[in-house]
Image (cartoon, rainbow, N blue to C red):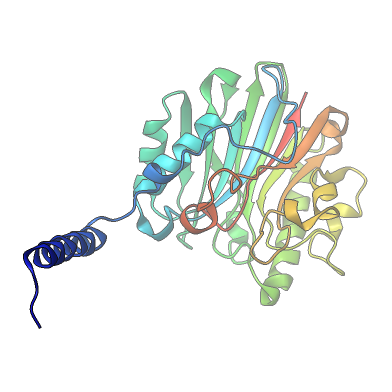
Length: 296
């Protein structure tokens, strides 16, 4: 078969194009920063947050940074920078040095991560200008570490510029059905600790509870049966599954518990649907969505 000059030239061009395409696909790793800009992020409705309200959020960051990808750190930093929130309790900080890098990227924020024997560490970050006083971060219930799956809760006390003084506990309960007995015992010991030591304080307990509030014979019945406590996010759990914090299951297992001293101060509680503007969120960032409450 004979090939004329024009056909030969076209064949050479096509071979060059496809060889270049193959080389690029092999050598260039997609950068999530180049694909989508996670700013102006939607939530489940108007945040109702103002400069004078205290916003507290819980966020499980799934083995942060997920898959050890350093790009995740900058994506999370830009997300935090875009959110109207004052204090965040994080769970599953796997790499403490990468958390420090996240803290360094957010110049208007301060952060503290606390290591534990389980390796999935707990942390706080807070917007410096929002608070007149922030205590040191302490671990609590360390003698009950087994019930908390090797991750004893951490606690911080903050004074917001609006005058609110709150004590915020951050926890990550044992997962899965076989952990229910340990969650129940951990919940019992946590409640006893709070009732004994801080009976009149404004308390928030944020975190990954690894169980829905309304589970039958649930681990947290000791709190729901006590009129001095309530879960600020209960209406989320009882509402549409599209707003649940663990969408892949789906279930709602990330909660914010508050004491009665704050009942009349809660403006709104909502799921922060960060996966709406950043479609790769569940693959690149976390399998959990944050939950935030606003306090006046």
